[in-house]
Amino acid sequence: MSEFFKSIIIVACTIIGTVLAIKGYVRLTKKDIKDIKNESKVEIIKETQSNTILETKMDYISKGIDDIKLDNRDQCRQLNVIAERVTRVEESTKSCHKRLDDIEKK
Image (cartoon, rainbow, N blue to C red):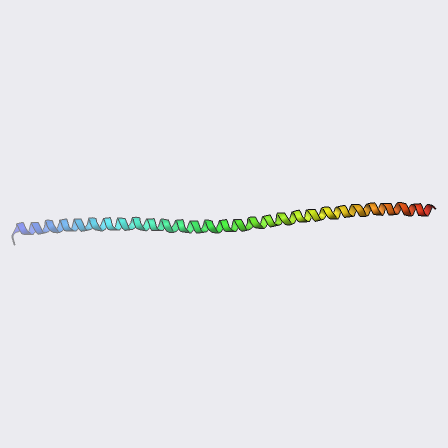
């Protein structure tokens, strides 16, 4: 073969090698970008799931606090009723003692 054909083959192989290398680089870059996007999507999904779980737990805690508040209000009402009854009993006892004192004096 002549030197001319050898040099053309060498140049052609060099060009083909360069083109294939560039194509491979572009392909890997696109794949890396796609992988990064997929990883970002996975991270976003995980973060969303975590936030959803936290919100659910916070709602559960909030409902528990509301129940405790209602129970506390109910206990306060019951305590007020008992306090009124104790006051009436004390008044009745006081009245009873006065009557007993009056009976003893007679």
